Length: 275
Image (cartoon, one colour):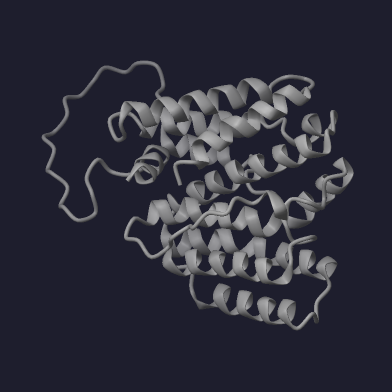
């Protein structure tokens, strides 16, 4: 499936599938010392200093400052993100997409849609081995949303607290490679929703405030270059590299125009369409 190939290109998969044993490689000859090479440890270390998945409170404050804190719920695509599959890398990216859908629409999503989005996050986290605590917490939040016993402002605060615990737990339970994939899904979906809201509001200045994150695009671009080569079809890698390269170029500008924001929307649409 094309979506699986996309996420293989983003992840640090081995060249072999989980269903077959890895071949034994012959010893590699010792090479003379040369220029330092890019490695995943360096990328992971750099990513820790990048706000790939900002906290819900930070996101809401930024959206409110830009005047687009409401209306995002209606921009969420009507798609089915299946979590009952074997490929956990795909699940991780889809979980990230679901997380962005939930966190960015806390203020204005109808109760039924918000609980469905949070439940999908729970399903993905469970499939990744996130433990029972996350699921129980989401169940409790959903019950209070359904009973209208929690305000959306208080809900943002609660999700902010949960946000700080989810990523470390997933890293411990599912392994380190799940984390950048969750972040990739959240970042792509978040950029897509925010750019769509900016265009809908015809807000000329919001793009500069919300979408100037060249370091994030650069991180994922390097990730694809290191781990994608030879592990996904050329067409998939070309789409990823084209999108990430263009997003980096756009977000590096000192000021983003509305046309720039429209291109962010188009570029992220092209990648998310592979889901």
